Image 1 (cartoon, helix red, strand yellow):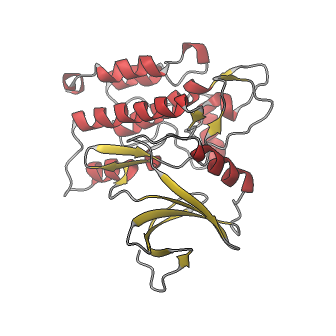
Image 2 (image 1 turned 90 degrees about the vertical axis):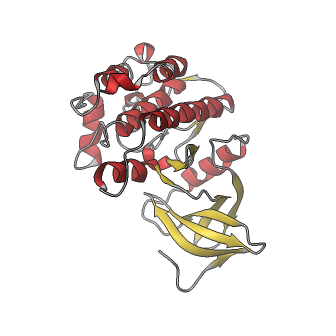
Length: 279
């Protein structure tokens, strides 16, 4: 939606609204030197506003080194009303939109098997790189993946977690992941359990894989409370995904963290998938 009375923040002019999330609105904007950027605005007046989440995201994105599959951030701004994350503009659409339209739109072809496979492998590569920067995304979902041509970018680090240690014990819930995307060990916190942060993101990748090959989300209820219960009870419908994807998801959507696939194992399983398995 184009903005009639264009706002400005510093030397950026807002052009149009790209999308809206739980906590923010993203705009296409133009810098004074004609550079096109994307700006995520987090309103201080929102009922869901929490400064700690903004500060967490601001600190974590500073630690992320450049990578071709991760959105590049330029600067962080603030005024009396909002906080602003200025980042590169990608001329593409969210993976949720691409998959949904490919299934339901008569005018759009389904994404090819090879492209779906490539999207997953690129996302795994991006997640592995984030982990090398000691950043765990914790909210891997189709809305946070932008697809342009045959390339992807991972974005939105509002739920991300920084830790030099992969294995952590939490005394309380500190990660605010999207219902269904967050692994049970970060939703139902047990101080006696050591959380493997790599496998928290593997859970999110399982959510993504299930969606890519079905167009549905594995945990879907009328509200957050019911969705959390589905996660707790591992209530997943596997009838809408092929057996090979069911097998992968069953090895991800399990409570025993030690038995859940790690990134290397998941990458190998996806890499070895063949189109014949879907016929």
